[in-house]
Figure 1 (tube, helix red, strand yellow):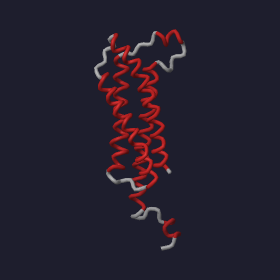
Figure 2 (tube, rainbow, N blue to C red; figure 1 turned 30 degrees about the vertical axis):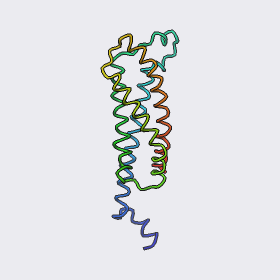
Figure 3 (tube, rainbow, N blue to C red; figure 1 turned 45 degrees about the vertical axis):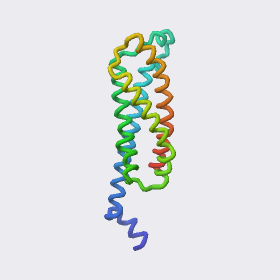
Figure 4 (tube, one colour; figure 1 turned 180 degrees about the horizontal axis):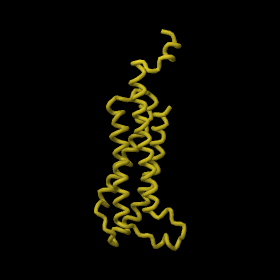
Length: 164
């Protein structure tokens, strides 16, 4: 079969499953990126990062409903990454060497951030805003920000391989 016949017939049976898989992974990547953006926006609001007025920043308190909303978004985001994207790689549905190499290289650190963020979720599930909790939360939010930043950088490397 000549190359012209392959190009002229993009709906061939062999091409359809590949295109369907690529569309599916594209939707998953879009979902992950959107969830990550929501997590970052909510995190910034929670941590008071968006506050320009320094006086207001010093009085910043975390309302329990805001923290709970953040925790829900965070768990959805972590689940999307693990169950919809990385599980695809584990199950052998991804064959591209570039993607497999990126996953092998970066996933151990991504998994460490997942573990930390799940522990953070467990620690603050049921947060009521008590004085002791508020002080601990301030330090933990700083660590969460660092973990999310590191994770985002590594995910971007895996996503770049997926989109290459």
